[in-house]
Length: 160
Image (cartoon, rainbow, N blue to C red; front, side, top):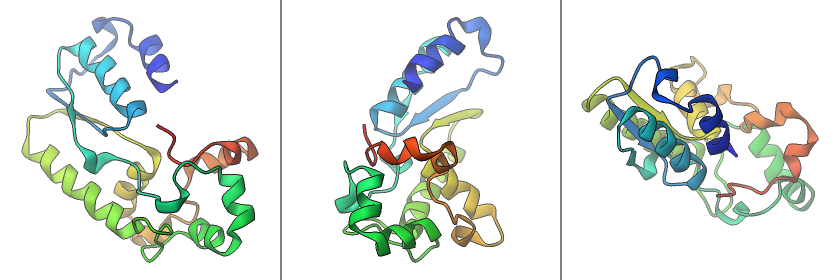
């Protein structure tokens, strides 16, 4: 879906005003495909880096948000509050995710610029929280898509 929207927005090189010298992407298909479309448009081969993947969500992977909320209400509430101490059940903590992502950004900064990183909402939030005075505690609603309404709850966690 994101790849299709990218193709519609950037159908030819004339639509890109600042060509990146480097493109980095998560290994997940929804980011990788978008990076490949942009890369083909500007003549840059994307570099896949797993550090830009969404958080590792442990036993929540592949489950619907609505099911998690119903079946694990305490864990769901803790996730909604966010914060550096939250850890996905059998998965990664938000602090670990942020540490991984920021290490990836260090690699981007060490390479050619301008650079484009194609990633995910949680990854972007981890970067933004690093610059916020409250850090990861500022991310009280870790899923940015929650603002879009209840239909988000029917989607699977970290679908490829």
